[in-house]
Image 1 (cartoon, rainbow, N blue to C red):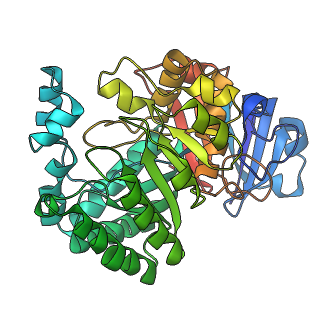
Image 2 (image 1 turned 180 degrees about the horizontal axis):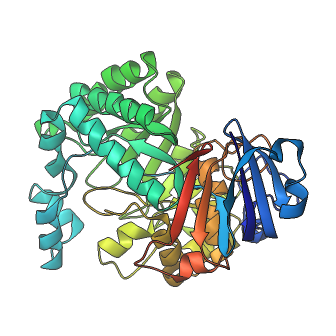
Length: 415
């Protein structure tokens, strides 16, 4: 049966004043395409029409429908969470306590905590156990309005465990009606068994993991953590170059803990560069001339207790395309809530509520190169829709610590 959402206090179509095939930047981030007393007609999991209720209700397909009254609700595209790490088995509570006691991220990692602390659980778990955890995470994301999520590996760090993680992500995606974008992050950190020979581990990633993921169509992207304590720029270039040779998209964690030159990475046309806390003014100017999205992850800064946050205002004012994501992971961002990320973006990064919403929907889709199907409510696009208990879109970032998402439609299926 077709679905008709009616009488939304505000329908955010994200159409703007013209169609954009590329990421939105500058003033475009503030164009939400707001329609009061709005309606959306859905058929076959796709948006058929979006506009005023009295106009959409007259559509031929608007008869014999399941109607959802959205009075006193804000209706918008489902969030696109373009950076998550759900392939793990347990929280890292020892890390949490050590950090409270004053240990830094790098001190925790040097003591055997951090990313390496998650290896045992993933390596020892069955594929079904891992998939079950991922499904739980995806459902929690949907509870908060997310309809599309990128899902990284990165807690197995050997061929068997990384491929198992990718297969578990695919298994979870088959059980969840939303959209999952799998990413191979075998290059998260160097595992303990290669600590003395990191270049040999890079060879393993390039010669075994990436070819296996490509051969079996298990990943859309390859990611690398290019950072002190993880992988050097030269190692990152080897890994991304190998990914491109195997027909996979690329993205990277970079400038989270220290500055790094972006040009060597931009040579591979990455869909997204993520974190970007210490990006230089020179690289901001270069990035503004590309379609690579800067994905900002303020929940990690919050959970790590950092005083500084990613320089969203500087990036936006310079013309860089900015997205927001949760960074959902067991060590530095254990949250599935995109509305919480919107709140952080507004209160700690000086983004306006409109900019934050666009960054969490349309530009998030661009960070996954899915803007032809996701990120706005337009005829022909997937019916990914979040309904919030609010009269004004600014409330999405205003309220925090509570979940005001009334419901989410995942390709037209009610969650």
